[in-house]
Length: 111
Length: 115
Image 1: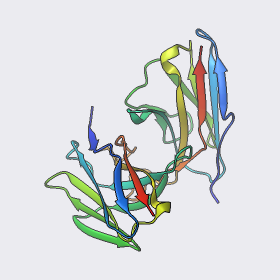
Image 2: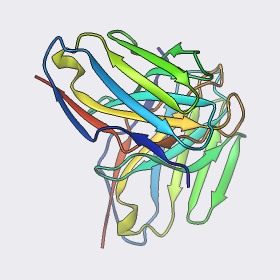
Image 3: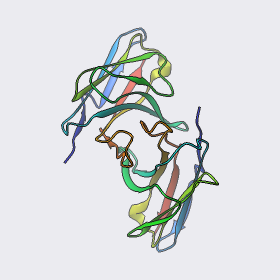
Image 4: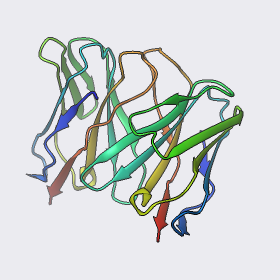
């Protein structure tokens, strides 16, 4: 079974700081990578996708991908209390038919 | 807005019962998925379907089956419910298959308790 590893946290950062969330995956065939955010008691929602090595920026969020190292990360700049949630890393499987989710990292941003 | 509707938010069943979890999406999506989410274990893929009457096993299909008779509806069936199937069940759908845009739209989930 393919593995997706995330530090479960909680990761605690003060408001305005940079939060760094990390993920490693075992399936070398994965080509597409996604970050989902899940608030407590709610369903996951997509916040970022990345397909090529390097960085991809979207507002306060930056996704970073290194396929050689099988590593993907999410940076949240100027963290806000509303960013407090669980962040799920989800590589697409090699067949490209489904997402395999990590267990998630819980982020807590204090004001 | 894409809407993925799961028939029940909370469900309580007894061991050995046959349980049906229903999911309907209104965006003509090709792909539909069933995940379960447990504390400490995260989201795990049970089954998925990329077309009507087609189904594929995910990582944990044991004890489950699925049905997709119509494009918009994907049902998860617990043939004989057991206590270890107590979980939050999440249905999801997506428009693309194999493309670099597999955005999943999730339903609000069904919390199933098997007593």
